[in-house]
Image (cartoon, rainbow, N blue to C red):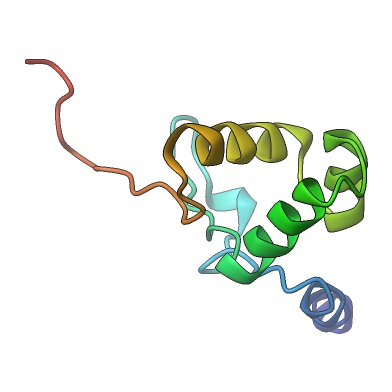
Length: 99
């Protein structure tokens, strides 16, 4: 099992994809638990944006090429068009959105 994890981490490094911030034993996860995942790196986001601007493929093709979900590509590019930002969104935990 450990050998498989090491191989997987080496595999992720070639795509500059960072794993989750901490390892989770899914047997311990209860219904309703929130699992925090690490955001994709700025470097990866720049590569995706550059490929999109250079028309190197459709959103679906870029998702496959960079090993991310299609919804990430779609949301990332929409956010970039609307705000010009490529950094991950910051989530406000524990705050109420109600006025």
